[in-house]
Length: 256
Image (cartoon, rainbow, N blue to C red):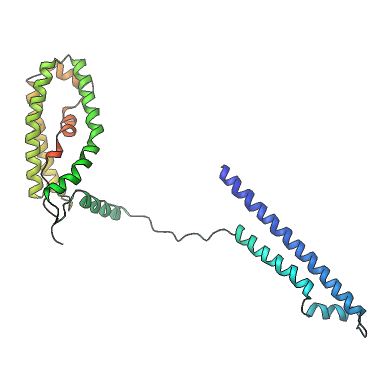
């Protein structure tokens, strides 16, 4: 709002200055014409006043009249450039949904794909820090949620340690399953494979179910229910806290 008032004030001041300059120019131009008319009228053998006025009107301006007129015209042109609104930039068409989807697919391929001359070590050095950085805050959040839920459910340190061991076995199974899916092309950074992703998701359900069944042999039913009522989900914890940094790099991008 303040910036709009400032722009309006500047435009108004520039317009007022332009009007004042044009008024001064008209005044000087009129005075110069009157002076020229008087000179013609006083000249020997001068014609009538009407004839002299016509001669002045159709004749070239005198040097005295030309100089202020030229300066004021230049001033008016400069002020008009200040107050003139800039030409609007050509509108670019908005990005469509399909175009946005294609762009994001290309970005995923560039980020998670592997170049033909990129070794596994180079790939890990490039991608693992990004993955760890993305998962750092979510991992802290689900770990704190687990601690609060276990405290409310009365889970002992011994039980919590046994749960960690069960989760370790589930992590190994999850990573082996994901490596196989990447190698088979079910999960690929280079193309969209909806059928492969759905098939992969179905296998994840089986791994999660096995992990929860193992945890159910460690926690009492009322403890498991108390953790659930506290808002904690083992599936969320498993998906975020899994050591995804240990995944094998994908194969290089296929030739087009």
